[in-house]
Image (tube, rainbow over all chains, first blue to last red):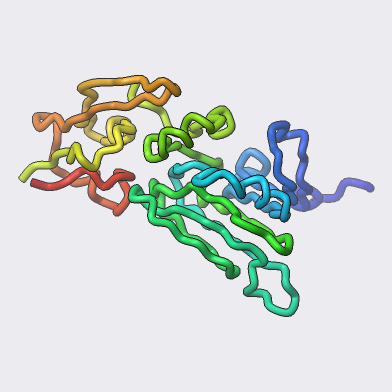
Amino acid sequence: MAETKYDKYIIEYDPSRYPNERRPVMARMESSVMEGSHFYLIHWMMPNVAASFADRPMGGHPPHIHRDVELLFHIGTNPDDPMDLGSEVEIYLGPELERHVFNRTCCIYIPPNFIHGPWRPLNTTRPWIFIEVNQGGEHTEKSYRQLLPKEVRENTNWAMWPDEGYDGPD
Amino acid sequence: MAYRINEKECLKCGLCVTECPEGAIVVDDKVTEPDGLVLFTTRIDQDKCTEFGTCQSHEWWCPAKAIEKV
């Protein structure tokens, strides 16, 4: 196809940019893809993902913060009931690790530096769509593994959850 | 009036040390856990603190809400 003036604004996900990505990603935008863009990540959540978390209490994405506001959209795909998420999802909020479980289409608002996680789907009966928005150009993250029970910390592969965009004091 | 770090609430993440615009929060001790996590014991240097209140300017400046006015 001949290149046109505005081709550059039609952007398809390029998996070669993210060799460590394990999720079925449909789209990812950030300032390194298009200058001025905030961070967006959209991927499917399949029933087998929930199954992989089922026997891991407090497993999933460990407690962490971001520098910018984050929006976590959980979007169901039931055409007869768009508010039916088709899944039961668990998330812990705040340094107190306040536990929440929900099964409806929703958006979770995460203020800057607000501790959230672990996050995990407990069960999934229908594939649904997860949309993560960070209101900054690049993804930032800092883990708070000190909040987790010892056995969970020991059984977590921390290489999967590197800190990004936060410098330590030393 | 002064600001201080509530040690019972502090998660020892060290974020305040890098975020304080006055450089008024300092590391007193540093411990590395077996899994590599580094924990920082910090305090507010009252000689450097301007009491401008940046550390309380938004709800989650400190993720543990461990900085308090006394």
